[in-house]
Length: 71
Image 1 (cartoon, helix red, strand yellow):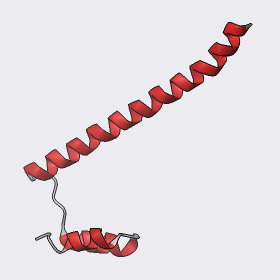
Image 2 (cartoon, rainbow, N blue to C red):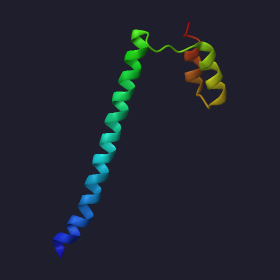
Image 3 (cartoon, rainbow, N blue to C red):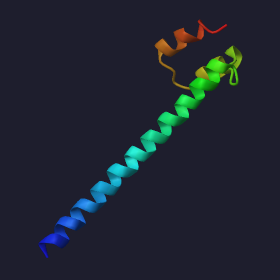
């Protein structure tokens, strides 16, 4: 009975941690791909699009100042 209680409390916690870790790894891999595509020129960000998106979103002032650096 004690083993069943420990098992019932531990397994969901382990599964949740593994799920969170897996999602984090997937996000990191996706971001690495985006950065690689930006560096290689395969993906380009356009100033007009960035300004339109920043006007629609709540972009912090620090982020808005970065827009001035884009050529």
